[in-house]
Image (tube, rainbow, N blue to C red; front, side):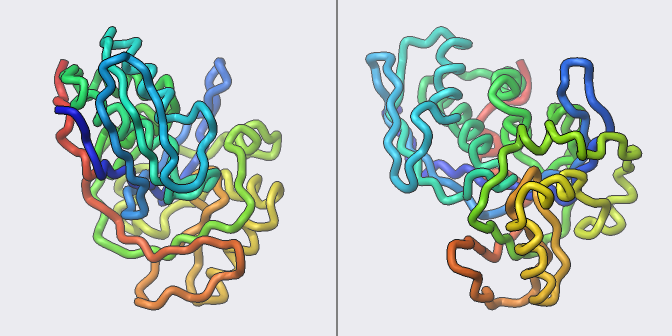
Length: 280
């Protein structure tokens, strides 16, 4: 195999996000449901036999050492392979949105290069590598909508009814570290239970990061007000600044200049599900 083209890296939405504590090492403990949606980046991989890693931006420019390159390098180091790759990235999922775009790129990179390089590493091994890259990476490797606990590494499959959502990303992004580092962040939410979520999956709980995000960016409040003005109550996903709400209409309202918006459908499984075995 010399190349893999049109490799999808879908975004996610947090249907709720509760912070239930904080570990001694500073990592926050959370409960959430991560849901895959059909807003995705597209990656291309071409084999290099010289061991080098290179990247080509096919859309918006990425940082020099983005998560795809870091994922490829981590996989090289973990496997000891002498192979390399040229990676093309068509970035569509907004950055600093709370939609997991970079983590999804990293997960798809691990899955694709595991196949391109013929490593045959298990999903468990890839997830161990992925967790060193970011707390959301194991979810995208998991390949299913999930009830998420711990720091993001404890995953349980969850069934979510098919639905559509209006997802809106205002111009200003938010840095995750600033949200989690804020003294205003609520860190003592009570533990939720899966049956409570299942009864009202799209209206359950809240996002504990939302109040802090709104204190740092008026864009979040503006986007939520915009959703409300169009007849639907929304909430922020992840650490923002994107917001979303269930959407039953076919039309996409005109958004203010500089905003991004899409009507998205949820997905039952990741497009790359089954690309790695589940056992060591």
